[in-house]
Image (tube, rainbow, N blue to C red; front, side, top):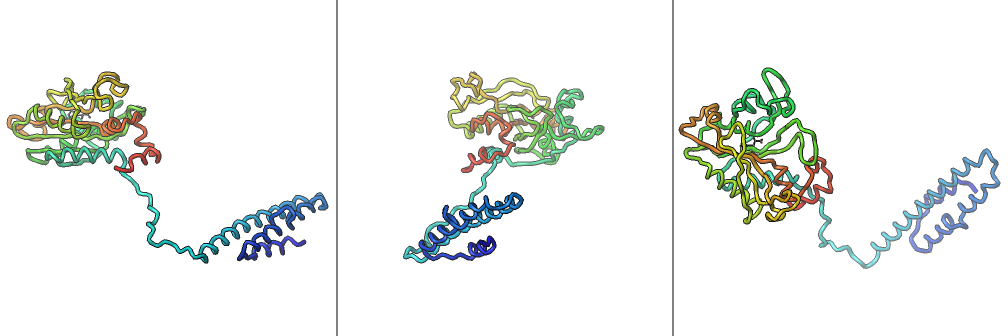
Length: 338
Ligand code: PHE
């Protein structure tokens, strides 16, 4: 029996009925098939040739099996197309998989939407900043620890150029270029020299807000953030202000909201305090206004800043910051409807 001619016969085999398919199966697939017989001949082949012979008939067997599957499919197709069942052309087509916004993008947009309802616009600035916009204009004393290498990624020394550590730098740029009233949000990426963990990252996102006008007071700051907290986390949300310190605001306050997970009863997200921190804030320090050629005798302002990751973590009870940057599709797919 010639292997080559068997190969040709297999490749050229055509079927138009179950009987012919069965014929193929008997001849090439079943135990009593010609290929089965060839396997039986293995013992008669000399030791030197056995390996090559074995290889050939194995190939032939694989070929026959592939062809058999192909013939089955062909027969199925031809019987369905020749039968009376017509294809339903009105059936909707399959849906192409749709992408979705990254949760950070979704939350950033939500924050912008909320503040735009009360008149805030959006401004942006460079991620690589000079010392003036990131520190000096913001009233950082010359030896403030935030300027040290451990917090800031410096790119050049003298004059200092660094990756911005907050988007307060954008607020300086806006104040330098625009006249009050100013009501602006600056969302963007910020960089700090921190070890990556579930709670910290060296790259994250902030939205900072700034309002400068005549007679802006701490009450305006409170109401604005109260409005934001209720819009973002629900009508029942409470806020509280804790005294704090930032070089660029005076007085300064840290803002907590009542824990949106347990409603203030205490859980592991709020570490059983009933409160979670969402932002830093305060009245713009008169020195900062003066640095931007805005007269602090005439104008006052408030500013606040929050981490977008933090808001997203609270909103969806995500407990590891690293999930936002790992791009695990199983994580991202959960935000499909956004
Ligand atoms: N820039 C501060 C930070 O990055 C946040 C902040 C902004 C605080 C505005 C007060 C006022 O932590």
